[in-house]
Structure formats: structure tokens, C-alpha cells
Figure 1 (cartoon, one colour):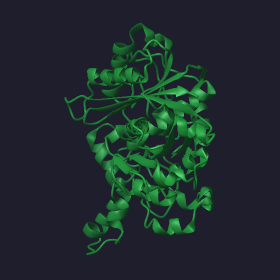
Figure 2 (cartoon, helix red, strand yellow):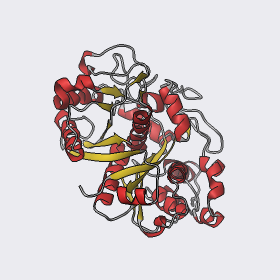
Figure 3 (cartoon, helix red, strand yellow):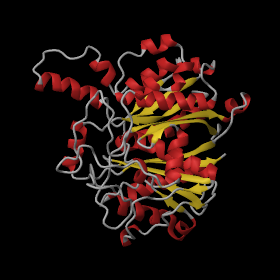
Figure 4 (tube, one colour):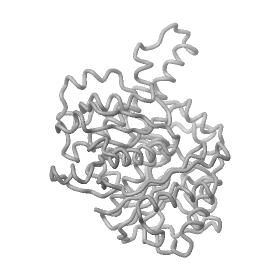
Length: 419
């Protein structure tokens, strides 16, 4: 490992609000974003959304096209904005989080963006809202044409491409899609890109905009959505809750960050990936454990080093016991020295963006020395015996372990260090 990878900028938007500050304050204070859908549907989950109105939904209370009201846009060349074209909500989220992160890092309009910067974003799916609007016109309204920007604005690569246009990034611009591990994969591969000397700066993270009628109906049909709320590792948990938004981090080589006098927020020190290769939706304990071990080995951090563990923690019947069993398999008695948080209980499952926002919030928790609480807990489940943080507590380790496990048996684990 020749290049340490430092974190110099953070940005996010979720149902908790817009910006890192409000997201962290609400998570730390135990103030979750999960609310009943309005209007309620008979099944308790699905709902119609009006494209032109604000809506309050499970894990998400943002108005659409949030980017257009961002105060950060005053610092952006208006010509760049004109070139973006039609934005799906997926791209709006990515652009707002990306713009916050780059501004936070002090890199807006920096010369490094032109050639020595890359963008890696993870998305679980493309522009669901744009696609569903087009299908409604074709199949419900009987129209013969759809909006001419339907394909460019709905493609899964649109957020990364539009972020490059907004910022003037001319280096590699890539999109990774590994379902719920997408943005964790993006961060890990960005780390390797910097280590290899292929870039000085990588803007990495993920976005998702899955709170549409079609997407919700698909998830509901799978039978994994909770009718009430997300209860990670709790008895009587009833499933996951969908959220949406974006989280983006600015990663830099140690040399580049120090040369420009950047404020260092932390380090991305390790990345472990594995594939269960067993089942499309059922997790495999050994596959999960393999990714955790690989991340520790990559970071050169022992399993007995006290760590804040940001769990995948979906609140589903299958995932939570498998993740708990994997942690016991890897850490053994040392698990008692760690603390486990699960922020999906606050912001919902953000699919392609979830790994990035969980790593981001975990990094802030390290910096603050505060472990935020797991919300909605009803009591212990013997199959999920973990050192859970059920009320905010002081905990100041130097290490963060952030787990992301996806359909298809795709596992990604990130290890961070406090600045």
C-alpha cells in the first residue's frame, strides 16, 4: 500500500434532510425520518406520488428536483447548469451531495478537477421516476411518444456523467451497480484507484431514487417491506423500509491533500469484497464473514482493535441473523469491545446510496466520539446478540467498519480511520 487515501469532503441528502450537518444531528439525536406514507394504502406501503408536488414518504421527505433550490449552485458556472439537460430525481440527489462534498473539500473550480480527478458513483437502478412517467404515457395514456430526454436522464450512468459536467471533471467517470452494495463498492474501488496512482482525487459515493409507485410495488411483492418501521436486530422486526437520496465523499491521496493544505476528515484504510455465489436473495454467513476479514486485512487492522461497526442492519428476518452470526464468526470474544450501530433505522434503506451514507455517518460519529442509537428497538432477539447502541453514548475508537450486503450475494465492507 503506497498511497494512504484520505477523506477531505462529505455531502449527503436523505429523508433526514439536506446536508451532512442536519443528517448527523438527527441521527445522533435519535430523530428518524421514517413516516407512514400519505395517503396510506391498504397494504401500508405503496402509494401514488405526484411528480410536481412535495411528498412525505417512508424514509424521504424531500421535494423533487431539490438541486434547483440548492444555495450551493450560486458558486457554479450557469453555462454548466444549462448543459445538464433534464434531471431525474436520481441525478438531482447525486449532484446536490456531490456539490456539497466538493465544496466542503475546497476543491470547487480547483485545477485538479480537470485531469487528475475521477468520479465513481454507485446506483442500484436508474431513473425510476423518468422511466415510469414514460411508461405511463405509452401504456396508460396511449401516447405514441415520450419526452426526448427520457433515455439520457434515466440511464444509470446519468448521475456520474452530469456530476462531471457540473464540476468540470475530465478524468475517468464510472458507474458501479452492485444493488445495495453499489456505493460501498464505489468507495472501495476509488480507494484502489488512488493507491494505484491513477488519480489524485476521486469523488465517490452513490445515489438512489426508488420511491416510485412501480419500484415500491416491486419491493412489496418481494415480501421484504415492513408495514410499520425498520427495527434492525430487534425482536418482532417485520422487514426493511425504503429510503432514497445520495451520499458522496471526496477521497485524496495523502500527498495531494497535504500539498494543498486540505483539512483531513478521516482515512479510507481498507476494503473487502466477496460473493456468496449461493442464492439471489438469501445471505450466506461465510460470504459475509469473508468480506469483513478481507477488509481488516487490507487495512492492516486486527479484529481485536475496538471499532464502531456500522451494520447493514436491514431489519429483515434473514439478513439480521446472518450478519450477526458473521460478526461473531469473525470477531469472537473481541466483539464485546466493539459497538454496533444501524442507521437504516433512521434514514431507511437507500439501496445504491446506503453504503456511502452509512460510512459517512460512521465517519462523523468517529470524529465526534459519539455512537448514535439504533432506533425502534423492541427488545433483544437471541439470534441477533450484538453490542448494539440503543441510546447515544460516548465511544471514541479509531476504527470504523461499515458493512454492505446486497442481493446477488454481493458483499462489500469498508474500514475507516479517524483523522
